[in-house]
Length: 138
Image 1 (cartoon, rainbow, N blue to C red):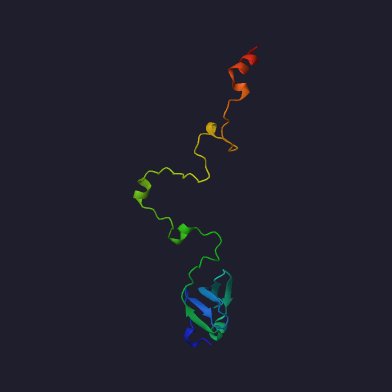
Image 2: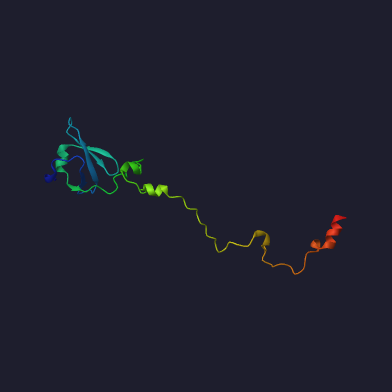
């Protein structure tokens, strides 16, 4: 029984003491006298005044995330933003991104690399000798 909550306040959040469901009173239909409510998950419902008087209700604070039931709500619509920037922030030049070299990267120029890690031969290849080059040009 909700003797101390006989008249619902529009905009007030309530909890069913027995069910634990949270809802907000969003309106009142003057013709049918029904009380219009909206649950946290977005479902709408109507409660007759006679039923309201028998419910085990308590007033509660507004839930932290009342937008859970709304599909496409923009952060700007809520009146706050996680990316609040001052005018001075926009005036600063962008800084170049500095990339760090990884430990596995080879800093030696590619043409000087020994891909198989075998080292350099002690003597020149036969094809690189002057005699071999003369034979190729004949």
